[in-house]
Image 1: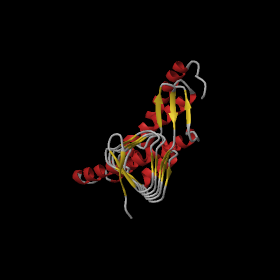
Image 2: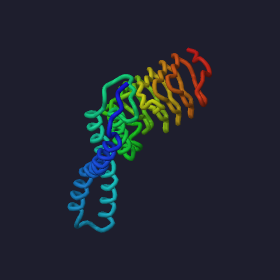
Image 3: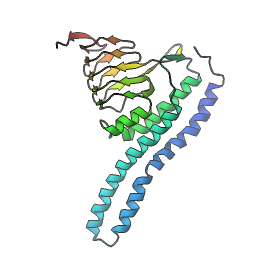
Image 4: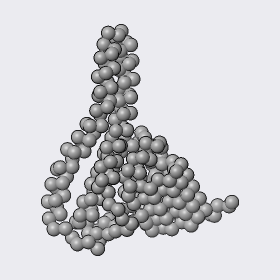
Length: 239
């Protein structure tokens, strides 16, 4: 395990003061394409009837919001790609550089949430998750903005993840932060509002029911249905 970082509290305060304005600057920069588009349409429609101009500018505001969502996800995804760690399992004291690095990625992900909730499921959402470090298989339908700790998550081909599902690659225990891979196999279905905790492996073709809570380091074999709180085996899927 990594050593405890001396001066952690001061480092955390200083980095937080630096990171907070950066986050709002990212939101502002993401508005740039929409602002440029609005100014262009405003100039073109200046001589139009008021109702025609109102409709045009209103539609432009909507398109500008869409452009903000896309740009926000791309900017944050690129930053995440730069700073994300490359590891399988790790643990460190709460007061450590690993915790700070994880904290930065978590803040970036929270900055992405207002845009991400409108971009899932879509290829744009999948691109964002991939940039943040998630291995996303072909044809995966990720209908949640709460795929957290992307660099610790692998999503197989043709997986369906329901709305509101939460997948976490981290947890904090008495000895500090623990990071462990979540591996989701081929053609898995994860129901709406299910919660998948660190270290879980879900075998090919299996189903995790809606609102189920999968405890840490649970291993679901292929072609099984699990549900409940905590999630337990329900039945084998017949083929």
